Length: 257
Ligand SMILES: C[S@@+](CC[C@H](N)C(=O)[O-])C[C@H]1O[C@@H](n2cnc3c(N)ncnc32)[C@H](O)[C@@H]1O
Image (cartoon, rainbow, N blue to C red; front, side, top):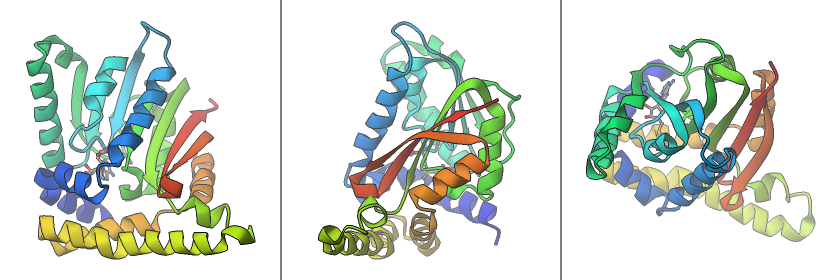
């Protein structure tokens, strides 16, 4: 089975339980990382201004959409899975229904599509966000090239993704932290290979999903490797923030056009 088919099948199957499972496997910590991402995005714009066109790539169930809609004039949400997109649409509808502001929904457009072949013209976006999406791209370089193509000259991309613990990659050389580093690395591998799959297995009852989720997290490049890959595809990482000792990284990318 191709990675593309595997990804579509898995996310379509887990769509209904995705938010719940996400909360459980991250112990709710993912909300803090999302908050950090959103506060960076908001900090970039001066009061009263907003991004003209913003894209939430791999939007999933649309966890970031409401907040992104507050800082962008036109918001686009794209995902390869129709099932995930359906949940995102319902979620946003409900929020805007609750606050009685349905008009704003006209500025938010949903697309079923692929990161590797974005249905947008060159230089269209001044903001692209990918939260836990890039490790799922079936062609990482092609997806990053598409982000580059669709970003405007002064555009900015934020990529949130699992990494390799920083304690291992950055501090390992210092002997005082050798034990701590090894322990942290072991914990990282143990969590992704044993704990996370077990939780996903219990709740999704689907053996492929749990295998895929841990495999994709464990095999994703380290921060240093990924920064190189970004730059090979025209995305210059101006800042790379490690969170929870390097379990997760937030990459801030600019481009030269
Ligand atoms: C782990 S979820 C993340 C969802 C959301 N961004 C979040 O932070 O909760 C990854 C999402 O990426 C989507 N996806 C995977 N590969 C994709 C691709 N090549 N193009 C577009 N979407 C993709 C999946 O369908 C899934 O909804």
